[in-house]
Length: 164
Image (tube, rainbow, N blue to C red; front, side):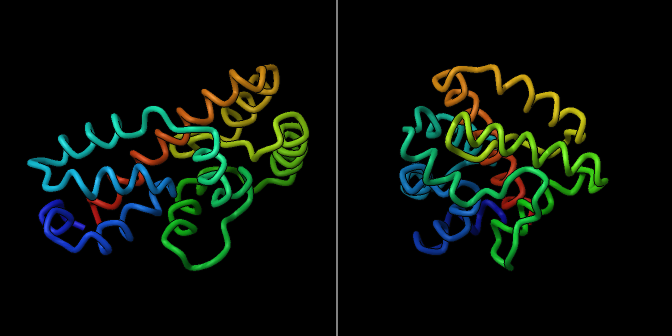
């Protein structure tokens, strides 16, 4: 959706375009309410600022829509399509999938939530290394990392929406 269209469409249409970037209503509403933006750079800068801080409840709500790393999102929603594209580079080799499954289980047992990482641009080896490293974090440390990863994903998706 070109910026001009995002700037002039109804709030409902704008929200529908932004929600798949990250399903945090406060973030979506802030962007919708701040329109019009003079440039894509202004929109991205505003979106980045609006993403601070996200509460633990907002993060957990957004995580409910993210598949485990290595799993392919199901369905035909915009969010599922975005997720499949972001994880396209994750190897489907049996060894990699086995390691990701074990890592996901360990992470979920320790932190009680799905392991989230910006997969776009990362190899399976990079993701596995990050997963192993992050298993050493405290819950508070991990929550900050999750929030940052979620912000990175949201901004990448927002850029994709603008390019569509």
